[in-house]
Image (cartoon, rainbow, N blue to C red):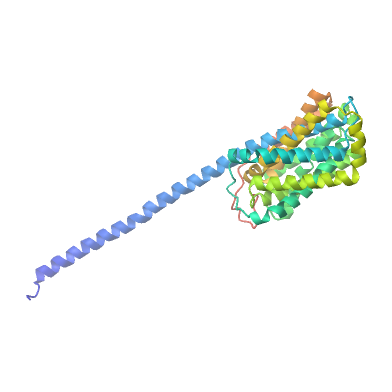
Amino acid sequence: MASPTLQQIETEIIEDNVESSSTQMDISAVPIITTSTTTTQNETLVGTTDDEYNRGLLVIGGITLLFASNSPVLHAAFSSSGGSAPPVLFLNAAVSCVALVGLLFGGSTLESATTLPSTLKEEDDKKLQAGFEMGLWKTCGTTANLYGLSLTSADHGAFLIQMTTLIVPIVQGLMGVPIPRRIQFAVVMALAGVFAFTQDASGDAATNASPLGDALCVVAAGFYATYDLRLFEWGKRLSARKLITSKIATQAILSLGLLGVLGYSDTVEYLASDPNWALLVPVVLWSGVAVNALAPFLQVGGQQAVGPTRCQTIYASQPLWASMMAFAFLGETVGVQGILGGSAFLGALFLAATADPPEANCGQDSCEV
């Protein structure tokens, strides 16, 4: 075999350099394509998060109206002139059982019509534990709230329940969760509205109020605040249908137990006294299906998107809507100071609704969402 000439060797070296340069150019082009793809994916994720947050705000705003309707509706049953007032434990058990039946029949429809939160990581083995805990907090809160509403006005009951607006961010702050200044100011503003309203000495709301009823509503607020904080944690581990169905089942069992042990004789006497069914049935249906089944179901996903502290600031507008409903349907009035308190609530609601979405990676061990 003949040895290659010098010219052939030079030609091969040139061809090898050209191929090597071509390969390097191709490889260097890859990071540019990858970077472009990564940027597009990040933009999509951010857009999805914003959409979920905005959708959560709408959901929380809607269920705020449902929750706000509860105080006037229940107070109407207690203050009805068409018959004796229903025993608190009887009403509590009836509402819980109706809520359970409504969710058992309509839960699948609700689940198919709602979007699962992006933070959800299913842990089905925790369903009974979560249901018992959440049902216990809710039963304690509902029982205290009902007793309070039977002794005070609808306006006072609705406003004092919103002590959760103070309790939730304080607890989150103690847990090391960073709360934005804007939200902190909104919480303070909302509480100033509560104080202004409850100190209003004019109007029917002040006349019909009682210290014991007000105190029971504050106790209920403590239970409800605990419920909201734990709901945020359990909402990451169970779907809304599983969590709320289990919670309401526990609530129904506990409320029936309380009724059997402490309220049986009062209930028998009440049912024998020809109660005002035309009022009682709509009250139980509305409070059971709309307030205790639909609203908590939607609350799971909405609170995951918005965060418990921001939700509490929006919930703080409940007394304002409850006052409007109490005025329209029960004839309860408020004075100038009460109107100023309502204006403070609207300002707090605006601050919370226009705040930036919470950061999932805030640089702390515990973030707002």
